Length: 379
Ligand code: NAP
Ligand code: F7E
Image (cartoon, rainbow, N blue to C red; front, top):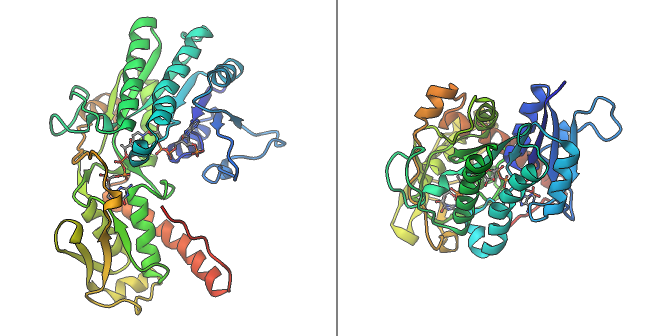
């Protein structure tokens, strides 16, 4: 009998990679998607064979983390062996604009899942993975951060996730639920949401190289993050639930990088060497060198660019009321007990994202040259 998994947040970055991973392991996978006025399944469409295919092992259900009855009914119907609770309003900056909704979906939403499993008497059958986050460390109390580092959340998102973290621990201790927190540090990919900083950068580097955009506006360039690849991280979600005991785990690379340096790496991929001049909100990323040979390797023509041209500027609208300055994870526990190792390092991640965004933007360029209107997204 195939194991049955239920994934909340199946249409998100991690939901998509995890679905692919679990399907490849022979699972029957059920995902909860939200009703939206436009199609919102781009990331998983390649996995879905349609309702009429007999061999389909992948099912989608409408639902929402703010709707207890819906979640309880779905869990009762599906009777999963494993639940991966990935659904969340996951944007830190947006959580300052929508704090109550974020608390409801990210904090109480987790309680709704845990309590449905208890109410339905599925505790002995069902294991639960909670998508916890390095944002819990916020104003960090030690460097690097491990499972024992005290939390100091710095946003409504992180505070909501703090509730989710502790209610997961509480249901484990009070009712013996096999419930685990994966404290995952930032992980990115070609399907990362377009408004997170890495994807915003790789999309802009691709568009600027193709003469589809003039400048990139960013907020805090000094922030440091421990960035890994989502493909590596979803495997760990599964490993965490296969471990003999329910525990909490830090998953990270153990390397931290400034936003500014991520920008340099992304542009370098296209043959554009940037140097940063000025300070604070007057800091600019300007072209120091153009490597036409490297650009040619990616079929790029950089003749529209000049040495000294300003490509990156700071826009204070992207600053946060309270910032998380530095995250650096210590994944020793997962390395020792789960055998955590990574296929992608930072350079591999940048290459994977740049390759994909250049392909995407080349399509736009082709459409534009053919006289068609291309999408313009603003944040
Ligand atoms: P993501 O791309 O933003 O995906 C979030 C998913 O949650 C989407 O499917 C979204 O649906 C869904 N969702 C949002 N609000 C919902 C609601 N009220 N009801 C039902 N579904 C809802 O996030 P991700 O990067 O895949 O991250 C997955 C989880 O890990 C999140 O909980 C995030 O907070 C956490 N996390 C992420 C990272 C990271 O670096 N990526 C690190 C640590 C923890 P739509 O597609 O309709 O918007
Ligand atoms: O910001 C700075 C920003 O939005 C990273 C989520 O997946 O990871 C993610 O949260 C850093 C911050 O991710 C811009 O101020 C500068 O310091 O890509 P981000 P995040 O806030 O770290 C954690 C682990 C999660 O759990 C979350 O769900 O980059 N930054 N300029 C910018 N950030 C954005 N978004 N846009 C900018 O223009």
